[in-house]
Length: 199
Image 1 (tube, one colour):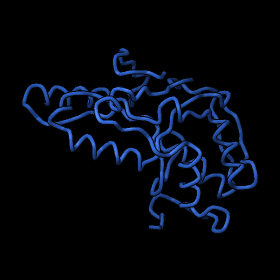
Image 2 (cartoon, one colour; image 1 turned 180 degrees about the horizontal axis):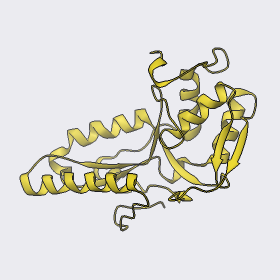
Image 3 (cartoon, helix red, strand yellow; image 1 turned 180 degrees about the vertical axis):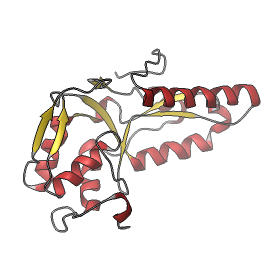
């Protein structure tokens, strides 16, 4: 089913704590001052125009490293599971939230790919290998403090409120990002944040 909004928040890290603080500020401003605002507790978002790193944007990071022929470091055993959401599906959710902001204001919604779009890190690497024709080079390192082994969003609350559901499967979305990055025909060389071409 995934983790719902009714589950107590557990931030795990200073980064998570900062997100939780922002979440509460928005909800309190909406309640106290009537600010029309909705909170999205976003899981792993990925898609074109993203240049990820090991900590944020890891789907794009894995693809970029594979296309550059560089090793990918997995912390832990690689069996960590996440739900991933393609950016176009997130944009659809933003538009629905804006269109319904008066009705939804002051609420928090988990936003991710949900149980239908889960991958382990190892599964993502296998998918990348299938797309690229060769398996990425992988090295393993110790677990990092605060790493979560499992996180999958339950997105049913927002679906019930608006009818929203992801249109892209994990496989379709990863393929779209792979193709945007150049795929097999145009390997990404020297790709850094400031060097991303607009496609």
